Length: 117
Length: 115
Image 1 (tube, one colour):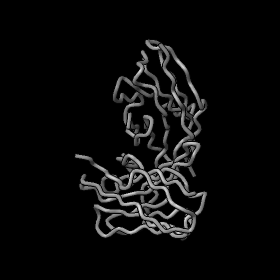
Image 2 (cartoon, chains in turn green, purple):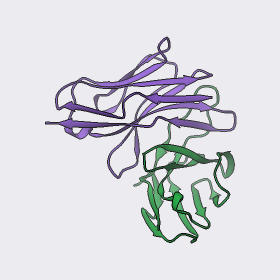
Image 3 (spheres, chains in turn green, cyan):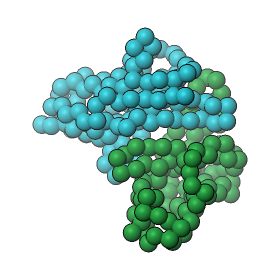
C-alpha cells in the first residue's frame, strides 16, 4: 500500500494551460507539503498544510493554489502554466507538529514530473 | 535562518570501498538534521535523522552520520559501498518554526559506485 501517492506521475502540457496534481496519504499524518525540485535537483518547499490549514507559504506565484479538502489530501492547482514551472513536484506528509523537540520526518511521494512546452 | 552546504556535487567510489559524503549546516537554533536518498526517477527516502540525542546516528542500509557541533558538520559515511548505493543524497536541516516544520535541502551529492 503506497503511503503517499501522487497523480499523475507525468504531465506534459502547453504554456498557458491550467493543471492539477493530486496527493493522498494513508499514514494518518496531520501535515502535508508540496516541494518543487528543479532541473538541478534542488528541492524547495512551496506549501505546508496542517489539518487542512495553510501554515507555510513560501514565495510562490499566486498561480499556484494548494487545496486541502481533508487532512489526507493536498492537491496543487497551477494556472497559466509557464515554461519555468517545468519541474518535479513532490508531495510529502509528516506526523503532527512536534514543537521544540525538533523537526519531523517527512514521507515523500514518488513525484510528479511536469513538462511545460 | 538555516542553510546546508553539501561540499561535493559528485562522489565516485569503487564497490567495497568506504563512502564519505560531506555536509555542513548553519542554524540559529538547535537543528534537526537528516539525510535523504533519491534513486533515479524515485521519491526521497529517509536514511537517518539527528535530533539532539546520540551524536552518532545509524541509518538504513549501513549508513551512519556523526553530528559535530564544533565543526557544524553532519557527514554521511558507509564502510563499504554497494552498487545499489548509487543515487543522489541530500543533507537536510529542519526547524520547527512555530508555524510548521521547515526543511532546507542541500543541493545534493550524486554518488557513483563503480565495479
